[in-house]
Length: 106
Length: 112
Image (cartoon, rainbow over all chains, first blue to last red; front, side):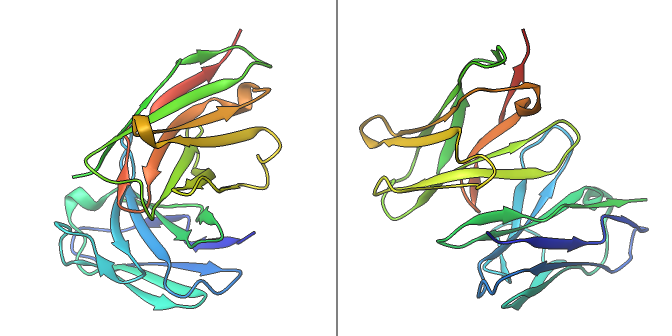
């Protein structure tokens, strides 16, 4: 099964900061990676899928890159509504797995 | 627009079987994977397993001995059964056509 390493686990940032989260997989997954935002008491919301495709309606300050085993998620200018927990997920035909999560806090 | 809704008991006794159903509307089952995910209180997301539209299944190795996921396309539903539950199975359970569509989640508590 695939192992995911997401870092950092916690990130302290301010409004306007550039924020970067990384996700590393134990096997190559081509580009079958998604990034989610989750707020307390809510279901995860997909922001990026296929490593770099922005979900419809998601602001362009969110972006994703990478392929193979190394992936990056970036918020170009952190907004007040962006304080949340973010997860990466592999979703290929063989398996699914989630990263450990990154809590973005003030 | 695809919508998913979980349903089932919110309380299950230890050693019994947790049974949940996900009802899908607004989309076809064809060519998609239908997934169950859970999140224990204060913890991260854990993939439980999925069923492909053909009926084939793949499960998380850590849960495979206790899990069954099945599909009923005539009812636009897929279901989860988790046997021999303990308090560690207390979680919010989500159904999804990941990554794009998720249900709102249902809290299941395992307690006597």
